[in-house]
Amino acid sequence: MPSSHSSPYQKDSAAAQGLLNCLVCQQLAPIGTQHCKRCGTFLSPRVKNSVQISLSLLITAAILYIPANMYPIMVTDLLGDETKSTIIGGIILFLESESYFIAAVIFIASVIVPIGKMAAIAWLCFSAMRNKPIQQLELTKMYRVTEFIGKWSMVDVFVVAILVALIQLGGLMSIHVGAAATSFASVVILTMISAHQFDTRLLWDKTEE
Image 1 (cartoon, rainbow, N blue to C red):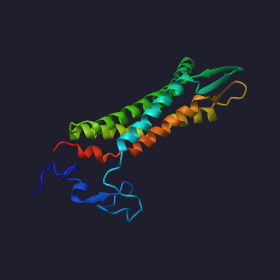
Image 2 (cartoon, rainbow, N blue to C red; image 1 turned 135 degrees about the vertical axis):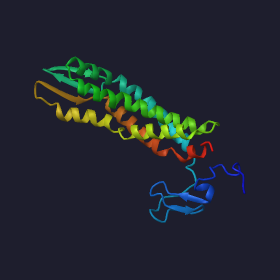
Image 3 (cartoon, rainbow, N blue to C red; image 1 turned 90 degrees about the vertical axis):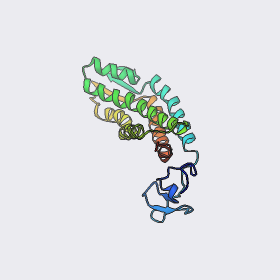
């Protein structure tokens, strides 16, 4: 019986058994099959340069997150007085006007979610690159955190769009999109692509037996 070190994959994985799984429809096919017979997706045992691609996209998103916080993301017109607000400035503005719920939504969607998702992806890439194996409990926690954050990845863009659409009170108060919205939307898109490009099968190859 071959030793566990004869293959870079875990002995109970599909790749170690001579099979490929489609990342789209989960159909199994023998190694060497070019495309999935069910959905036509290109098949490979592991995505080539998955960690490097995810990290490059993640770094770009982190860089864009700086102007997304430095420049105004929304412009508030209150009784003819125009106020440009950054993400944190907008949160403070709603806190001062006692709109605590809106302030909490913006803080969670625009600060906690993007930073949490970038940190989760960075930790996944680090875990895939390090030499030490990963314990099952550690891997499960990483999956749950990344999956939970991923569900809310678009909320931070929708928050500003909803505020712009709803808060249009004529000459009393209105909100417009600021210059940072483009950078902020780019951060969301890049982190989504970064998470999608990361091949999670690399983590299972490193789990402890």
